[in-house]
Image (cartoon, rainbow, N blue to C red; front, side):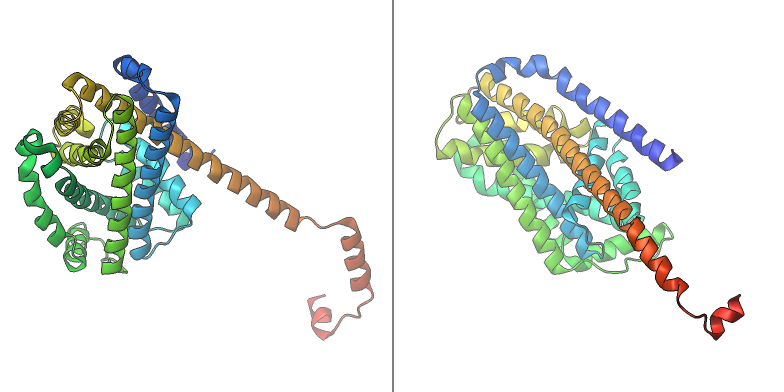
Length: 336
């Protein structure tokens, strides 16, 4: 076993250990909430989370392709989902380091992997704040008024995501690190495609939360729209308040406030805790499916390679017989 493979296996084992612990440690908190939910609601919520995570992967894949490194769906899923498990390991750089390492298998420069990874956050943040601004102020009213200052970030992020600004910032960082500039700058189309996947992701995350909210007693279009905005607001606030690891605590406060018009405080807390656990399970499911798919593809490719490399006895005999009847030419004589 090579050193690189050993390190990858160690990373995977540690990440899965922390991820499993994150799920198990929250079980006692959410067991009462889960008991009030039906299996179709739980299953549908998990499927919606998986869809949202796939949208996030597609957003990252679109940015990476626009920067010059297109990937097949299976390869992108493996790099993204397995790399994302690093967020459960203490320290914020494990996901990008894992993606940079696995990207080497596909000749993706480290600077390009890092650029695509870090670009996903302003895209998520800008689209998430816009989603919250559209869905929450009228429906949630005063319960989210204390978070209104976040709206000021929308025009700032819109300007910061302009391709000329992004490319200037990335190349400045690379120059400070004494690295060559981007071979292929980010385009406007790349940013728009990434934003489209981000909005699709927020819709899927909102569906996941809406199913939980429905099972806990809040029904109707208002509860569904509030769920979309509540999840987006909670994620954005948790990302901005970097003091809290992975937004723990901060996200729950924002989500409970956004759901206040349709759920009591205790029920809203149950919904937020169930949501966080299901998202963690979704991370593990996506990583497992991506890893299994990539492994099966590798085994199939290895089998085809072995089959194509093997020569049947009859073919060997035919080849031997035909070559023995050929009279050596001048070049063959000189070799002999």
